[in-house]
Length: 308
Image 1 (cartoon, one colour):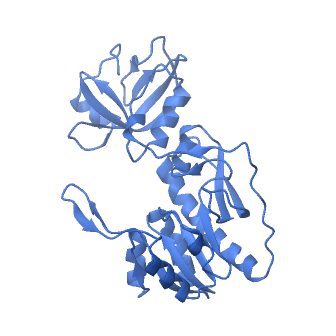
Image 2: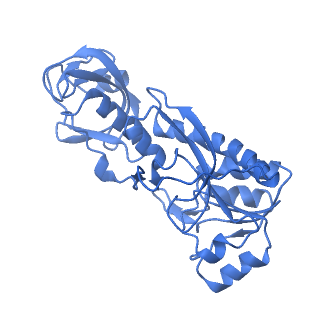
Image 3: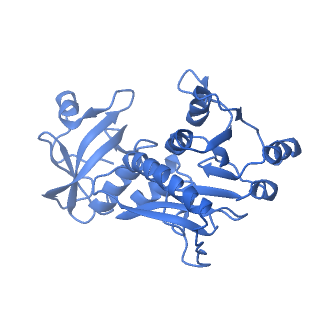
């Protein structure tokens, strides 16, 4: 097949790589514009563009897909299929119908759960134990198209959103080739999504970072896992912010929310249900991330003190 690929971040890279390595021809890649990155705000190409350039694939970074010249450009490519993976732009009807088999999208949830921008983080934040990848035929709605293929996977008890992100990106890449093969062989049986019982995964913001130690230990643990690596769960000690990068559920118990009940090797903190979490990795303001043992060597967090 002649394929146009639309994607931007790391998550989309394995999908594009699989297409490049396959029998199919990637005739063009569309990606978001280069953005300033880091403290020095260096203009940086998105990962998908970088991979396309390495493989001598033409790259386009339009500010809008509604531009008539962009639409004409895509139609003139006479593609068999447009593959969209975390592109970050809404596709107008003219583009949805520009290829022989239309547009398909690789989405990191078991639709209709977690439509929208941040399905992986919200699955972890909400304590889901199973998630997966859905490949859908795109329509004008937000992740509302017919399901063409779905793959499930378990979420580990201590798995972070970043770790799950990496796994799902490869599950999605394998599923994409399987789906395209099914399309070629006319083996697709589209399944309509239900009109109800769906949920949206809104963008992750820094407002989600502060830890409320009055919540259950499981909820706090999920928050830490779900917000890693950005924006990170955080708490306060002695008036200074501590970013919490890694925790585990503890067998220790306490009686007051935010109470430090142990500081031997790890920092064990009581939550609202009397259960505790062990802080394994954390980061003080202006400092590097470190394990709790190293942190405690230079910071005196006493048993009986409070976080938050």
